[in-house]
Image (tube, rainbow, N blue to C red; front, side, top):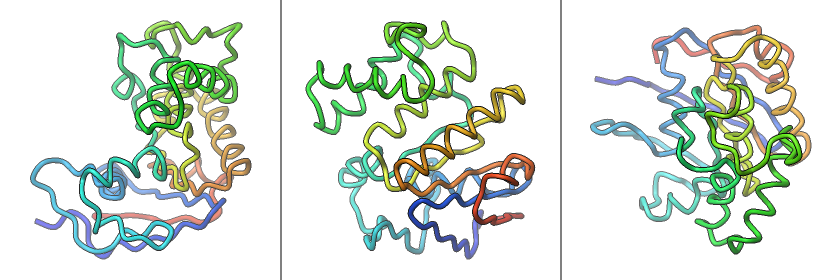
Length: 210
């Protein structure tokens, strides 16, 4: 059965598009389709154009090279996105190493700079810490550092503040807005809460029943 139908979105450089809708409306499935990470048995049709290239034409190997480099994603629950037995600095550095952008030593230095940029300075939050030693908001900052490590053209944030308290939520949203302004990337911000994006998004799309 069709889950999403005739979904059509456009995001410019340096633009924040809010995608709002009730739970089960298809927001997260849209994000997974953009990343070509659909669950087993699901199939996508249509076009996903990034910088003029249709991502639907790419093989899985080619798509792996685009994920992280051109497309970044922040998931709703950071503890499921992070490896619980790997140190936070190594997890951020891994993105650079896997894509061949840095040696291991260079990647660790870059990871420390990235963690500092997202509000985790090494003197207070050493890169050698494990995810369980951080709060929920701090773990989400690690996920943001991983997602922006290669300065992607498009960042997809799928309910990135749902599990956080109101104060931490506001700080994470301010961080995302600042990163968009700094890097010029596009941001697709997915939420079920219109208040979250009312003062943040340049445009708003509302999804209902796919």
